[in-house]
Length: 361
Image (cartoon, rainbow, N blue to C red; front, side, top):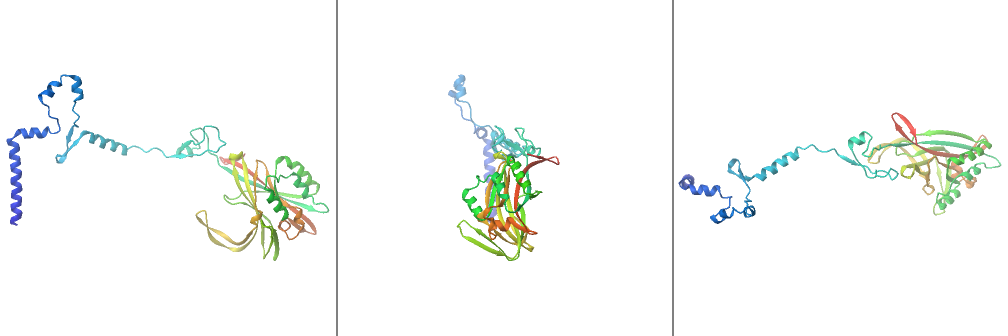
């Protein structure tokens, strides 16, 4: 305790001594107040009469401002603090979304920027609008009777198969299959062939769910039915199915940058449902899907690009006379003692929905 008292007493003595010295010596206070000002002798004062010398020797010492607790800060410090406070309180600008326009758009619109409000209102800085294109498909099924003449062969005279890889065309033909594109200009001749042989035609309109292909149910698989197909390695492979359905899938992709063309991909599948459902992860979403056994003839997948107003036609080839091949099993049938060959024509129809009404493109 004694040591603490003595320490406090010595500190008080030092403080009172410093205060007494400052009061007794007013020059020390003046020197302390002028510590941030440069000392000027008589020669410097005399030279200030020259304006150029005065400008060159002007005082660059920052003015000091005294705040609480006796601390001193330059006045520029307070300007920086005020500017920071104003920038924090500024209203943020609207977020901007980058739109990469398709190559078919008018010049000057590529890479245009638009705010979120402009997108919601349907406008852009260039005055354009963002349109959403949907696809609907016309699926026509044609049953052509087979008698002494196979009339379906005449239809293929008006079908374009050149745009498909020749090796794939040969593989399809070997399996009793043919796939090609048909334009509007070929339909009058095709209708003449169909009318001459009393073919039966039926057209359905299909609105596929987004992300799913157009699925065509061709026929049912009989119990114990065997289907054979030649693969890429030229080997003939067959499989026996306990039942199910014969399906044709048409995957699609609309290409407005190609003038409204549509990329399609045709493949063939045999599917047998189990009657239950299971959970699968699709596109980062877990969904319920039906349980089924599937066999896809992957080596017979056909990619094709359709121009506007064209359709893809799928049917049997001359090799379909072999009853075991996939072409015959899918597209040839007997009904009431009469033989028929079946063809499918799938036509994509792009349209835009505006204000509750649809406008075809």
